[in-house]
Image (tube, rainbow over all chains, first blue to last red; front, side, top):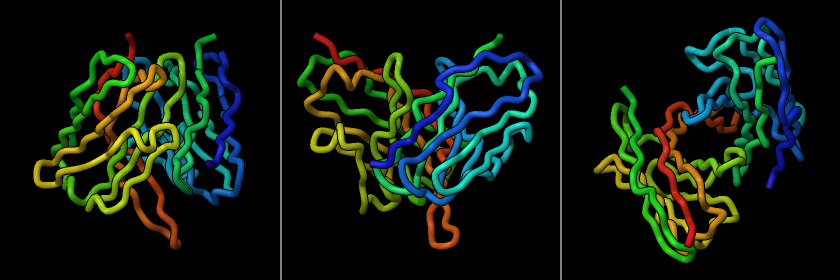
Amino acid sequence: AIQMTQSPSSLSASVGDRITITCRASQDIRDILGWYQQKPGKAPKVLIHAASTLQSGVSSRFSGSGSGTDFTLTISSLQPEDFATYYCLQDYSYPLTFGQGTKVEIK
Amino acid sequence: EVQLVESGGGLVQPGGSLRLSCTASGFTFSSSYMNWVRLAPGKGLEWVASIKPDGSEKNYVDSVKGRFTISRDNAKNALSLQMNNLRAEDTAVYYCSRDQAYGRGGYYYSVFDHWGQGTLVTVSS
């Protein structure tokens, strides 16, 4: 199975900050990766697919980049509603695997 | 409006069985890949299983192979997860999700664009 190593596991940031979350795959997955946001008690929400394609309706402050084994999710200016847990998901091959998650907390 | 509604969760003893259901509406269910994803207490998201639109191909995470079975009834817009021989580590909120997979350059890209509200499965004696 492809392992997805996500970092950091948590971070504290302030409203307006620019933050970056990284995900590393254990093998080349081209650009076949998505990013998901989950808030407590809520279902996940897709932000990015194909590594850099913004899902319809998602704010442009979210962006994704990378290919091969290294990927990043960037939030350009953190908003109060962005405090949540973020996950990468490789869908290159089964079994699909998520990163361990990054909890973004208010500083 | 796309809606996915899970049901069937509950408390079950180790070794027991449970069947989760997900009723879909607002989209062409028979054309959609569907998945189950779970979130265990204090843990991260884990993809559990997926099924092709026509039900001809199913995939599972290794930890549930031989114990869980994903199935669908396209006539009833229904997705199911039969869970047998349940273990404490299967305790989680289970979500069904639609995958708006698309092809590009010979590869398929998943987009889990709609999710149910989740149903809690607790495995405990």
